Every structure is written in structure tokens, then in C-alpha cells.
Amino acid sequence: MLKQHNPNDPITILAIESSCDDTSAAVLRDGRLLSNVTAGQAVHEAYGGVVPELASRAHQQNIVPVVDQALKKAGVTKEELSAIAVTLGPGLMGSLLVGTSFAKGLALSLGIPLIDCNHLQGHILAHFIQEGDEDRAVPPYPYLCLLVSGGNSQIVKVNSHRDFELLGQTIDDAAGEAIDKCSKVMGLGYPGGPIIDRLARQGDPKAFQFSKPNIAGLDYSFSGLKTSFLYFLRDQLKEDPDFIEKNKNDLAASLEKTIVDILMKKLKQAVKETGINHVALSGGVSANTGLRNAFKNMQQGAGWNIYIPPFSYTTDNAAMIAITAYYKFLDGEFCDINKPAFSRTVI
Ligand code: KG4
Image 1 (spheres, rainbow, N blue to C red):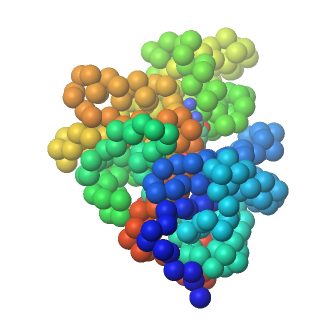
Image 2 (image 1 turned 180 degrees about the vertical axis):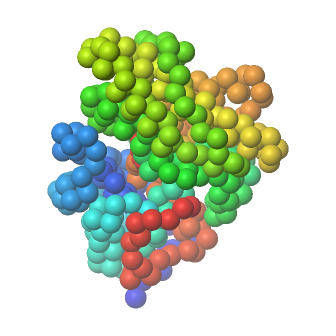
């Protein structure tokens, strides 16, 4: 038997996110964030990408201390919780199983409901996270969201907190994946996004030209760019073995510009087609300086109303899962304890 929530009590949610290589827990009370604790996994750096088996082992080590810290930081005891929220997918199955098993066990032992959240919806609703005393401006419905991460590149029309319309998505690689792979080819570290971002600030974005896709509608493609980058470097290295070292700032700036141009072209088309000019940016790649600047230019030049999340809510975090779960709690939408994790889906 689940404990009934007393309507006079605050709604206090503990959220857990473990879909990839970040173990994160957050506590939200009545829609305001009290804590958000995330443990990254440096173990993958040596491999130039996330190793699924190592990720799930690291989640097992991190989950108890991360949840413990999130509760302590929020000043909340387990007994005060109204529900446990968890990312059910999409993500790496081994990683998801750690978070979902932990969340299910905790919800069962406390006799409180479980709320399942979609990782992608979490990224999209990150704009509604409120903390401290001041309210951040939130996008009105409907708004467009460019969701760009290591695993996804999508344009979504958000009609409400429960109605997501996919307008376009990548037909092959995600934008973050392309950045990470190109960075790997250049011999830079992992994840490549923040490194490319840093180098790009000192480079000339017009120094090199890389291929841009010609895809119908609002879909994206990044695999051609990745291949053209690879072949370009291969040819240049034949002439000069130090080519990358000598040109890394310009290479990073030109790569970043190409990716930003590709992303913005379809987004502008989506704004034109839908007539919606409230436009939000979400996901790990939304930390990128070039992309943020392109958004700001559209605000000044084209009158877009733009919404860019604080850096802490761009990459994977449990705060976005907590706010997604809060809306589900208000709607009375809870999850069967036997509902399984899932690795692949769109929004
Ligand atoms: O959302 P996220 O943390 O994980 C997924 O759900 O995929 O996104 C991770 C991606 C990686 O590809 C990483 O390189 C990229 O976000 N990223 C960036 C920056 N910071 C992280 N890409 C470009 N510029 C950045 N500053």
C-alpha cells in the first residue's frame, strides 16, 4: 500500500538520473530546487568515449553517496519525500539499471510512488527549474526547443509539459557525437565539446570549409561533416605532419562554425514554418559558446525570444528530471514499479 500524499504537505521529490556517465540526484520541493548533486566519471577519458560497462560500475559506486549528499544538502530526510523520480530511458541500459533499481528499491521501502521520466523530456523541461528567491523567465507554450547532446539532435515543438512534437531530428550522428569524434581525430581529450569550445575562441572560423548536409525538411545529418573533417586532416597530414598542432585553434573554430551553421539553418526554418519565435536551447551542446552567441544574435537581429539554461543544467543532471517529475506528480501520473528501463526512443 502506497502512503497517501497529504495535500497540506509540500510535494518533495527526490530525482535520480543515471542514463549515461553522470550519476546525479536532486531534491525539489513544491517546484523549487533544493539540491542537485552530480558525480562525473573520469574513467572514460582514457578511452576517448563512454565505455558502457565501466559506466554502470561507476554508477554503482556513486549512487549511494550522491543521493545521500543531495538529501543532506537539501536538508530533507527520506521520510519527508513524497515520491521518487527516475530516468527510465533512453540511455545506456547498464547505466539505467543502476538508477532505476535504486529508485524502485527506495520507493518500495518508503511506500511512496515512483515517477518515470524521459531523459529527453527532462532536457527540454530544464528551462522550468527554479531555485533560490528569484524566478527565471520561462518559455510560454508552445515554444521550439533545439535539443543537442551527445546522443540527440532534435527540433521539438513543446505544446505543454506533456505534449512534445518532434519536428526534425538527426538521421545519423548527433551534433555532440560529431564534435567528440572530430576532437578524437585531432588527438584532443574526451569529451571533445568543451575542448573544441575553448580552442575555437582563439581561432578563425573562416580558416577552413567543411561539408554541410543537404537534407530535406527539418532533419539533421552530421556523418558527412565528420567524414569530410577526417579526410581533410588525412590529406593535410601527408603534406605536413604537424598540421593539426599548428592549426588546432582554426580547425576547432571552423568545425564549431560549421556545426552551429547547420543547427541554426534548420532552426530558422522551423521558426519560419511554425511562426513560433520563443526558442529554447537544451542538452550538453547548449554549453557551446558559438551556439549561445548564434542564439543571442537571433534575439537581437530577428526578434527571437530566447531561453538558454544555466551551464549546470545543460549536461546531464537530476534537477531536470525532478522538474519533469513534479509536473507528473501534479497530474497524478505515477509509474508501475515493474515498468522496465528502455535504451532507445525519441521524445
Ligand atoms: O547532454 P549531455 O551531457 O549527454 C547526453 O545526453 O548526450 O551531452 C554531452 C555532449 C558531449 O558530446 C559533449 O562534448 C557536448 O555535450 N558538450 C559540448 C560542450 N560541453 C559539452 N559541446 C560543445 N561545446 C561545449 N562547451
